[in-house]
Image: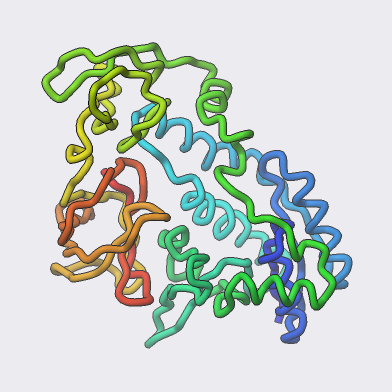
Length: 340
């Protein structure tokens, strides 16, 4: 059985490729040329050569620019905080790259994600990886049934230490390579510089105001801020101030107290369900409002337009438009959507 393993040049995908070969699959390595990934591609090529598997490079620079980078910039310019990794997984790794699986005559695509897929009564479920803090199901909630039916996660039942141990035992030079951090296409984490270069525009300066409209200072462009932000505001005050609202139309950033960042309700759009086709009635679940957030109990309710209302048992800090909220039933992903 032929499998295309998506290779990023890191230890996770390298060990995933190794395990697939050891399990008897006909493995083909593939890397995506998306944005300044030459070193990653070369590391992947070296690993593929060591493992004795064919290797391909797929030029996705244009589709990545249109589907991921443009989305990232447009969201910030609209005063929202995007999650490009979620979009990249759906649109690039498991859409554009999945097309190459068929072109190569393969049956499956594999990656080094810490997640698991389980089939139950003809439906494919997304389950947490056993890697503890490395569980990556939050970033995969937008996958559909057709995609899930063709994906393999070879390291889904391992933790990071075990993956690194296997890499060392098999003399893979990426064994101690650090994990990639932040957004891969933003150099030095300079979001503002990237947004301005990509959009060829600069957002005008505007006013910081409080909830009553009193002017507190001047901001340097709405894309510099995100809900819940405290540091880097440059506003003098005798108490800590936090971003509680970004109003692009009025070009103002609203500041408030810590308690103003708390909320017990949100509405999400662009919802994708994994455990079932649609949410037909209220359901008790746990939810994460960002990848690093603590999971909390809530009730989800279907609302008009295919959206979902989320009512939290305890107030959540900095519910941020543009971020994803992902729902869980124990270890299984129920679904998720984009916070509206």
